[in-house]
Length: 101
Ligand SMILES: [Zn+2]
Image: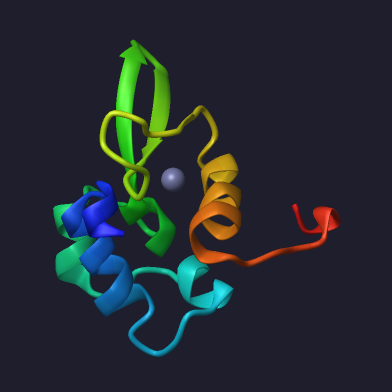
């Protein structure tokens, strides 16, 4: 992923922290447990949020950019949960029944 333009930190985080014990959807949705990480990320509480860059496009309106997409061509989402679906489908190859969401 890194050589394709993904954010290096996000890709490393994905590889060594989120999926340290295997690539599973549960791992992606797990709460962050390291208090250090939580404090660095300003209260971010779920693994998948580490893979998004939050941009405030207007006061009160945020967008979430996928850090795993190539730089300059990143998908943007208004709802973080849409981004999770994008990770799962486009980057990680998970598939879910639609009802899941
Ligand atoms: Zn992406």
